[in-house]
Length: 70
View (cartoon, rainbow, N blue to C red):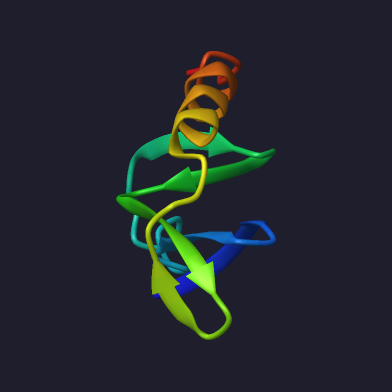
């Protein structure tokens, strides 16, 4: 598993080998394409926590997902 920082207080947990394993496209989030399942979590120093401003993050995810060409 790998974490990708999407904001100072939020990360995406994903499978860093998703493309190599042939996982399907999932979404584009803050300019990064993800394949396979992802988990968006908040970050407080070195620990995961609730996602801050979840409504903003989910709105942004839906907006960018519409730009993907299948």
